[in-house]
Structures are given as structure tokens and as C-alpha cells.
Length: 354
Image 1 (cartoon, helix red, strand yellow):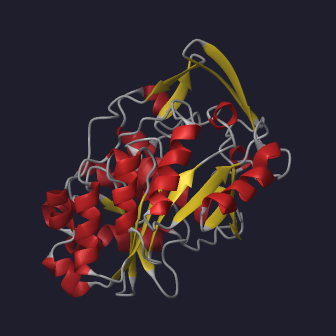
Image 2 (cartoon, rainbow, N blue to C red):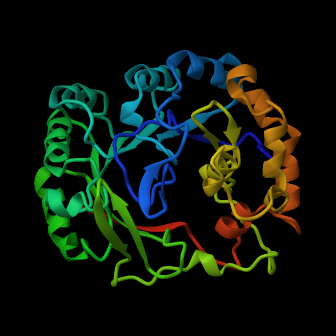
């Protein structure tokens, strides 16, 4: 499956985060109340794990051009060894492109200033999630974060020369602040503004009701864009034409989850996690056999890159078998996300330079 093209790595460093976002995979509305998945907040990759995964054999075999620290369940800034891990990748490839996506509300302004001095390079950037222009609006989705603190942290990062970008997840409650947010991003020194539109309203109703800390909330999708409804995707699969988003003509990509396992992408990683959870309400509503080859990963430790190293895991026959399965028996996540005939994306991002 992996042919030696330039490689990108998408790494989830932990399952730790301070926020409580209602559409994040780490949370679920159970009996109407938003709650954390079991087993969260207790696992992270350390520097020594990175050195085992990306060992000398890897650096001698592959050309790693990009590394992204963002995941399904975590905020990279919550990771203890983040500084050292970033330095490890830069040491092994001084020209590597580094991206960190964060809610930006952890750490102090001094910490962010020091971090900005590491990111005063066009190849390195931090993407801050800011979903409004005031704390009330922003916190309607980014629960347990503080808009004013994020702005202070971002300004400190920028003042040290850091390359910062503003990511705005658009809903009905904040769409009226989109243009003002663009203006502020330019005023504060952000290099790029990203408008993000999500399809994570899986019930097909365009809203999600839940309770958090005794308060009732209703999250509604934006009225400015019509996004696809993933709940209407047919199964068993039909009109299959898989075009993998991480196997491109000029590069390939791997996803390293917070346990150190390697799979092709974060979508497969999320599906694998759902099968591993012990609470039944987080599991898919269909048998594991319908998830194709993903169930095979549960049977042994062959995807454990801490134990075997990334190069050995990437040569595992499972990856070849996965690609072959796309002809007629794709796993659900490959069919939903990468089927050209469905033409669906998990979310839409519109990048606007400022």
C-alpha cells in the first residue's frame, strides 16, 4: 500500500483535552446529558514513544515532509512532552512542516511566547479554534474554554514570531459573527482565516440537544451552507469507487493514534476506537463484520508501532488487503468518506488568506 512516496504523519499525541465540545468523538449525549467517554484523559505518547515509532530505520527509509498534531479525541497542548516531540521531528528533518491544532486555552501567555519562538518559520503553524468574537458565543460550542484567554495566548504566540491561523467552526448561533472574526484575525496578526462547516449532525435533523452542567443546549447547523446528511448513506454499499484521501499521486499519509498504533487515517482510527470502547452506547449500531478489515486489527498487536516501529507496521499485509477490499467490500468508513460517487466529506473548510 505504501510505495515510498513523500510521507505525511497525522499524530494524536493523547486522549486528553480540557474542552467539552458536543460534536467531538470524546463526548456523547447519554440520556440527554453530555458526558465523557470512558477511558479518556489517561493516555499519552511520550518522547521515548516517538523515538521508537520513528526510529533510525524509519528515517533511513522514508522522507517525512509533514507532521500534524491533531486528533479525534485530544488537544496536543495537553501533552507533557510536546516541546521535546516537536524538536525531535525538526532535528530529524529541519525542513519538516509542522502543524498543531488547538483550542488554545491551555497554558500561560509566557508558555505561548516561548512556543512562538519555535514556530517563527513559514513551515510551522498553530491553528487556534475560535468560534466567535466573544466568550459567550465561542463557549456555546467550545465548552470549558475561554475566548479572552485564547486571544491573549494567540497574541503572545504571534508577538514571538509564531505563525497563527484562526479556525472558525460555523453554526447558526455564531454565523452572524463570521465577518467580524475575519476582520479581527487580520487585526491580531493571524496569517490565515479558515471557515469550517461540519456534517456531524448525524441524526439528519440539523440540530443536537443536550444538557451540560445542568444547563440545556440546542446546537443547530448553519443556515448559510447546506451540508450532506451522512445518515442517508446507503448500506450495503453500492456504486463503489474508493479514492483514498491519504494515498495521493504526490504523497502518502499515516495516522498514529494515542496508543501508538498506525492505521491509514484518522477516520479508520476513530472507527477502531469505537470498537474498542467498553461502553455499548459508543459502539456502532452494526456488527464488526460490516466494518471490513478494521475488525482484524483487534485480534493482535501487529499495528503497534511502539513495539515494532513504523516501517515494519507499514509493511503489514493488512494495508494491502485494505486497498484490495475497496473493489467490492470496503469498510464502512472508507465507503462513507472516500467514495467518489458519494462525493461526501466529513467537513468543509474554506480557507481565506488575510
